[in-house]
Length: 296
Length: 276
Image (cartoon, rainbow over all chains, first blue to last red; front, side):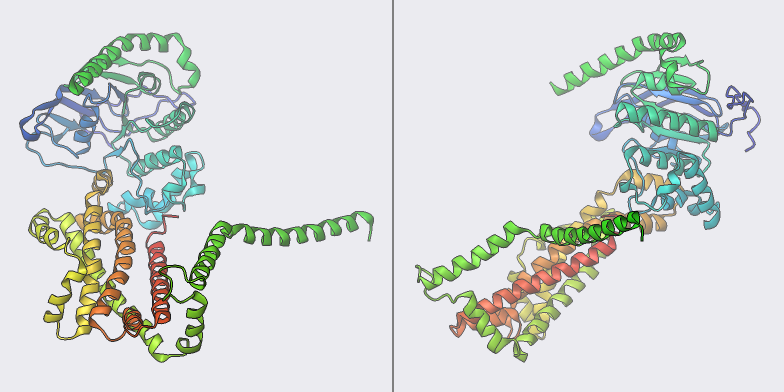
């Protein structure tokens, strides 16, 4: 994919042989985005002047307590929700602003928290759905690519003809990420995809995701409330404040790739965690207290 | 034949025997023994209460009595089987028409805001009226009794399917719609490939509830306004003071309801291959 002039490729990633690889994902520029929900006159400021710069191919994690507006930001980015002020650019092109109609598209595909595979379609049909709808591939091409991707992601081609409910939640989530990757998106948007999983499955899923990231070279925006997960996976971890959501702290994670679980006990990792923890805990406390107040 | 070979053959013979035995065991194990005992107990108690002339049971025939009459007079009676056919036909017409009109109406109300606002109040006013309350009006309205019975049967299943489909559309996961939009589906495709399959489980629930109500309604309607059908047969048994016929009618209705429920289940399973 050709990148527009002015956007620079961040070749910080190396593959296993140490050769630099160019990113194929898009650069995202979120500029002073605010979102106010106004049901029956009760103004709820979900996001306030939120600005984030994401380089092409970068893995960015947005960390914050529940209700901090990170999902709202993701939905705006995906084109499912409007914004109240500010702009979002993708590869230097205006994507969202106040008076622009919503534009969901295959260049920004979301993987949702609770999973959204179509239960009435088989794994293969789910994965092939995007390219077929966009008429980007013939059925044969789509099937070939789908089987290939499924096979490379831990042998999921074995379950190609199964229905999603017959799969474990970890497999479902992997299939969902593959369904998104089939569209060769500029940005992959992951909304707390491993939230409901136990620690062991989560660790396995992290390795799968890192591998898919290495293979696909797409820009990833990963939402989580889990700070450790954010640092372990991302190039940049962005700590968000609680409502109104805005950027509190940006951490550059300079851990080398490929990431391995042993890194979680390295000095660099622990240092980063310490730096970020303060901000996250403060926000979590605020969110908690507000919750208590609202309940009272 | 050497010794090892012989051993193996013997072992195979034994395992074959074992397999046959386990198959029988599995079949026996699959029977609900508690249920079988309670059904047998029920018929036994019934027989006993009638034979000892317990209070209230003086005019009630025993099951064996009813079966005897059935065997001698009804099994080969054309009129009895005609009653089955006529009732089934009424249920089939009423049920199928209610689904054919109710499913599209529910889909329209669920997907089109304006249509919902227009139609929903009317539905909500008519829905609580029990189907049997429609009997007099439908006899006045429809030219033949047959049509009014089918219409009342239709009413029984119609509102149920409309409400179920309507609720089904409203509870479609927004993530599914969003994703389909992201992946480039046109509105027509979203309707066919996301909304319709999402609603199928609700259609199935509406059908299951509907078929049960349909049998309730058709039997009552036949007692009021018909001279054939299983409901009529039961009623005639009562009027002519032959309780065995009442029992034959009741058991036949139970069986007919069971058979049509099974048929609907079968259709539903084929509608949702992803639900096992």
